Length: 599
Image 1 (cartoon, rainbow, N blue to C red):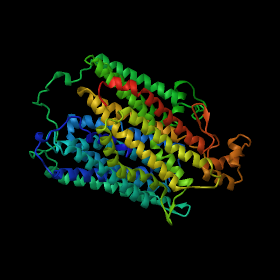
Image 2 (spheres, rainbow, N blue to C red):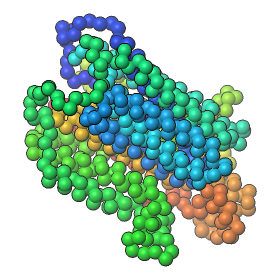
Image 3 (cartoon, one colour):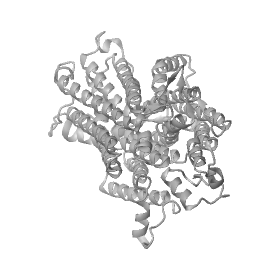
Image 4 (cartoon, rainbow, N blue to C red):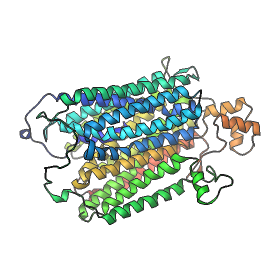
């Protein structure tokens, strides 16, 4: 799944291992089963909630489709910022074990708060909306403590250079996908309920309740079994509180990165400057006008506050990634080869942004399409719209091992493409998936729906693209990173993911009015197409209805172009990922030279 790329890097070991380096072992330590189960239920929690979040925001909390996409993108983006804080707290103060327990309980609390929000929306909508924001913040914080710590414990279960480690991470990664599948299936089944075309809005709370219970179960399992099974081969506890005075000496002082106070100050200044620049670029004066009676700085920030995620959260994500990337390059100990390899990571990370920006429409605009433009009936079973995205997890399970085998076979024959070429293929497959859907919706009538099979084809192509790009990119980072910058460079790479998710929210907000909006407008005597084309001006009564029904009277705009329909909307993703694929492929020769022998 897209959100767990950091775990895939463990499946690629760069050091050759001989049989003599470690005794032959057939069984894995029981601690792996504990970590597998813990991660499985945590991913049940995360992906289960993610599957129904956007639909909950629209149908229960009365957000527009565009606002829901922005919230969704901001949530995912921040989920990739907080692990840097969680990793720091673990390394310096709390240790892996405590961080996992704290993170698990915090995420469970956040899910139960969403359950409360979904229970209160009828009686107090404003309170339910506020509680939702707080709940997402709590989940983001808990994710930051949990995410970076559990996968780092897997490797510690084994002796150094143990031949079972590849297999261990593969098993662990399967736990992620089993949890993602189960969470999506269960939470969508109990939380996304429709009787015909009528949605049972009250059911969303049961999806969040199931997610919260799964997270609580994961935490309890880990807490009870950690002391007995989460131990080194010698029986020593793994992931305890770090000691303040470490006796272990660093073998080579070049391993430690040293930054001057001036570099830290300039990086902070750069981040602050970039933040305000991105904030200004995010401001749309027509959609976020300065309040009447206000002017100057106060009026400007009041206007920005009308869309806080787009104008406060997103700029912070973008500014963090760029400033951290520049900060690393200020280290004077970097050699020419190291600098060029780091630049390759940055270039690849830039293209990764476009991949996740397009891929992560799964939980927002593609879910809206599944809900309103798709016939989800399969052999008489009405599949919940939020469940369609679960085909990604299914295809990951089916194709992960064949892809791994394919790269090995190509490598034996000397035909394995270098990592940037693989990633360009991933972007091309992403474009192909959107092109299939774009051509299908182009031929749909105003009241027609497409078959769910078309979305399944899209998810198949997108999953194949993910397998070409996601594990390959992280493996590349592990190979190209100087040891002293390994953690920071992974942080930069994850920030590129966060930027991609933020951009996903921005792009998802461009979705034009879907069929249900036209039908609703027509039922009140409104020719919505004429309103959008500026041929008709709605009356005050009609305008009141359109606002209440969350129907936009403006076509969205992107890069100077107006998006009139779903065909044009999906072509945005075809062009973005397709152009990115071509450019990355053309750059692959130069990148190969800059990698200096790393493939």
